[in-house]
Length: 382
Image 1 (cartoon, rainbow, N blue to C red):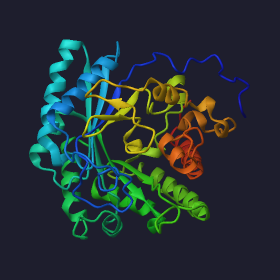
Image 2: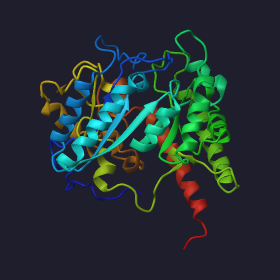
Image 3: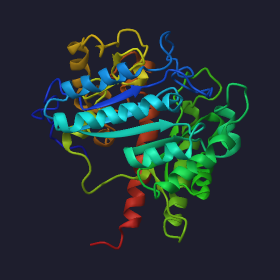
Image 4: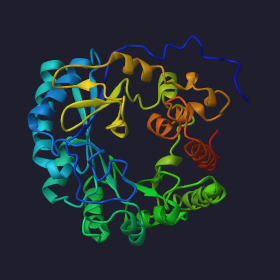
């Protein structure tokens, strides 16, 4: 039942101008050629530097410190392309960030997202010392992964990365990482990919639906929704069973919903904060609302090199909260998804305030499953 509260008194745009998180594109190049890559093999459909210089990276961290105001905890995700192709700069930027912490009373939480193809034991040791979180890109079963994530010569990448990714997961004690896969029309039985990853030994798993032009062969389409809903229910049943069996326990990201507490109201309304509290910086120092907006016309916000920053674009994104989205007004799930992804909305409707329908349908289904799982796992509690 919908609440009568219209939340009109909620100040969702508090602390204007404060930026607390940054996606740092240390490379716009990649050692894979993933078919569904929104970044066009890391180039983001742009021409420019393939590798971020140390100086540009330092300017980006300085900019974040300056824009963060009194906010102490700052988040930086090293992203690409493939960031390990510029690992020396990543290492130097972490050291530079640490040097800024005491001087400015800040604390950096660094994350890196990698396909693990170039991962070494030295890098794993470094990540374990310095990275708050590590995201590992792997789609699941070898045939599924290799079909969509080939190397530049067209060969599969599963055997190149899976053992290294598993080594990192174990070295981190199965904490502070997750494997992040993508499923498409080619594997509507994606629960089998989740289970494959769990059986390999990964305990923190996320497998996401592909977002693609409906005309391409691997896109998810409306006629697939019944099968996708059934697959989430099948995964939920298996998930509950496995978490009760010794040695079978794992987390699936979309089933981890805190129904007792969870984010504050402001976070539930604003979501990831893209374009307002969170930005992406390219190898050339250009600022965009998030990594998925990079290269899209009209969304360049400025540059860390000259200090420019478009406050009007920031305000547009600050106002892009769930209470300002007509399609969300009657949706029971709106305070769990926070209105969905602005980049997907803009790509499919041309408007950041009009959520992507497929995303909405799948999010509601996942939440239904998460609530059922929560009820089963807490049925003996008072």
